[in-house]
Length: 409
Image 1 (cartoon, helix red, strand yellow):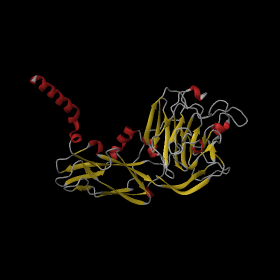
Image 2 (cartoon, rainbow, N blue to C red):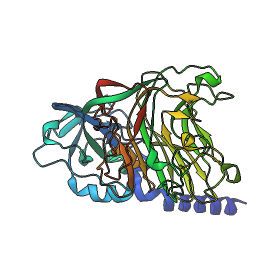
Image 3 (cartoon, rainbow, N blue to C red):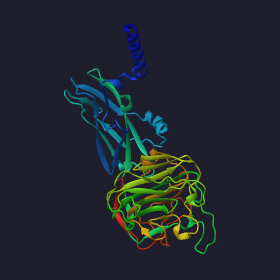
Image 4 (cartoon, rainbow, N blue to C red):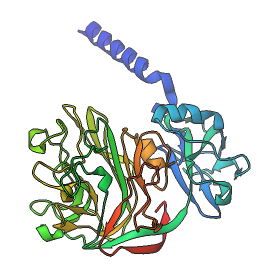
């Protein structure tokens, strides 16, 4: 029996070593870039010349002073882009500086003195997704190693944008006639959103009039097609007005949605009035994913097929097609602000969603329509489709334009 126990112990010890001895600091006290335990990114919103402090933390209080050197390492960006599916670029040379890269965790402390990262938004351009890797180069003291998964902080340098946004107070919305599959006179046309094999629908919203009530009068539709894919707050029967619902998310044949599988979903979070959110739904042909502020909230496998945003369901006309700010004709209309609305024919990654909250290049591959809703109107009063594809958004009702709104929010 003793021999058997010894054999079992040695086998377990060998298994632990094979899986755990590769990176010893991962299983002992170690230092890491502060704020990177759950995500390697640090957001740095820049308006004019601004600075942030970067520190190093230890998993245990320092017995003796621990000297740590941190420094930018541009060579790490390519591997990071490959890992997350991003297209980040380095900030221009001379647009940033890091002072005090030799930091110290004093005795009895777990957080180091700060290094100062400074950047100027005047040196950055809209449309670029800037990322600066800052990594731990060396550690001296207390025999501490480095937690490899948090050795590097990927600092996202976000140039703050200030613009107008569309404010809808109820009874106003935007239609996109070029998405119809028939005109008002019943003439059939070919819609570019009739059968999408892949899709990303995203928008920034700042809702108003949200409450905990469950009533048809409290439904707050954001955009989409009523019976196919509609983003809305509340559903009037079981979901309160302060929860975000994606209905019906019909994927399959491009015809009647009742013939398709549905992947309707509702976020667990409750939403607040007068707070900006970025919302996205992504379909890649096999899975549908729902994002809040660039973070994956829900993922569902599907049986495949296409999404139809051109027509709600058979027997309904042009007024139940894709719209921004209304659903089911004009039964319900959106109350709140909206901005940066986009429809893609490709599945965007989480990294791409996060990097493009405030702006994307209008010529990006797969971008079918892009409405900024920044108060700039065409001579006919429509909101320009920035892609040049001609899918301008036509306003109905009185639209208010709210000034001095900043992004990132």
